[in-house]
Image (cartoon, rainbow, N blue to C red; front, side):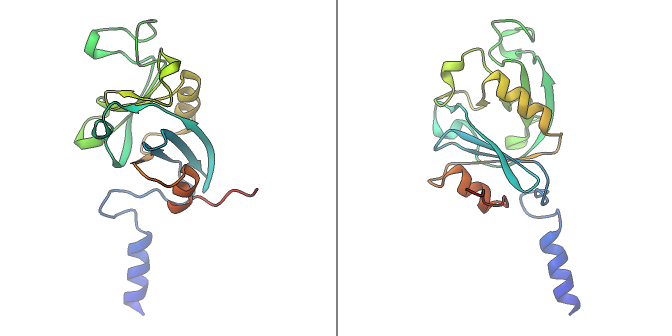
Length: 171
């Protein structure tokens, strides 16, 4: 009996090989590169689905489970020394950085764009682009520590949400 209790505690533990798993009710993001869609999950349900832009090449946008470790309003674009809020800044109005490949949250991120026509396409250097109003919505909803799962799957974004703990929508 003790081993069963210990096993159940292990399964529900925030410790697992991919890092702290999203606990039921925690905010969670899923990105499907195959369909260029993002799902925002909270309170155990898919709250919102939107189109995104991802990497020009399949391998450019990393796949796996990551953690949001940086958030910034009007982010500075370091590569070309463009201040935040400047109309030429390609990062848009918000940056939600995550720890892909052991980085510090300043290399890979979910961010806005100055080019809304890029949404739904494979055009980035590895980041995930959203319309500015969509990244602002997401930015306000998720705290640091939120988990982001990036996959390349034939499943719909709703099927992925259910697979990773969201309740099915009621038609």
